[in-house]
Image (cartoon, rainbow, N blue to C red; front, side, top):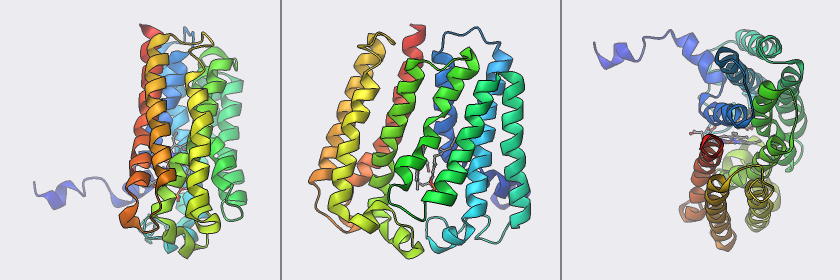
Length: 299
Ligand code: HEM
Ligand SMILES: CC(C)=CCC/C(C)=C/CC/C(C)=C/COP(=O)(O)OP(=O)(O)O
């Protein structure tokens, strides 16, 4: 079979619908949701646990699709996003909207059936937060858009935990806070080297509005409480030393990288080595933190 045939095995519209769910970002959403569920003291049936994690994936995918449906105009103006299914003209907006609403509503209903009302409610709230608060309200209005709106992406571990236990407790709240405080350094590091994209699209991201120096200061500022919140479960007795030691090392390295960003004076993408390093490590960081959380729970 030729390569050309292999790459077209899936009908184009299905691949475009799949792309609407932001699958790459969703890997970490699902991972943190699964880790939240596994870290909980739970006796949840494996089939129901699997369904709950699937619901987090479907809900995040539905929210991502609604985000892309709403912002097709912005995506068309940015190099990074111009080829997405809607600005690329490969999918009609009505199909995208129906798919997005179906996924979002289906995920909440299924979560309610498989887990409990509270998990379904928090899932519904996080979809609303990503779409209504971040995408529609804040993104085009304020450079604090991702600080407040980023909370949406911090809910999955809490949803996983609540699906398993039916209760909100301190550990998943700290996990929420960790992602919440991690999001600004994660995103602002990236936005420093794709600043022109956001400027062209008229999106008031921090580097566009406040400049490089101020954004770098903010990155370093958020990384400190983020590290404290990541390590806190250990001294609080909510996790064991395996989590504590690994989280401390990872967080110390995160702070070190953010201080390198703070010290960087470059204003051209060519000189953005420290920013690129922090952005890349930010993703590895969360996979490692949530991975060791689960390892610690079972060892
Ligand atoms: C408002 C908050 C956030 C913004 C604006 C943001 C933005 C971005 C952007 C622009 C990228 C780069 C390229 C892309 O894949 O589109 C990216 C990558 C990524 N983000 Fe975020 N992000 C946010 C929060 C989060 C959260 C909460 C998570 C997960 C818990 C996350 C997980 C990821 C992952 C895994 C990647 C790498 C994707 C890849 O491999 O291409 N992000 N983010
Ligand atoms: C369960 C649930 C609803 C989870 C939420 C999913 C999630 C990871 C939300 C975080 C927000 C996010 C990825 C924003 C991307 O920014 P953007 O949309 O501005 O990125 P873009 O420029 O790539 O479109």
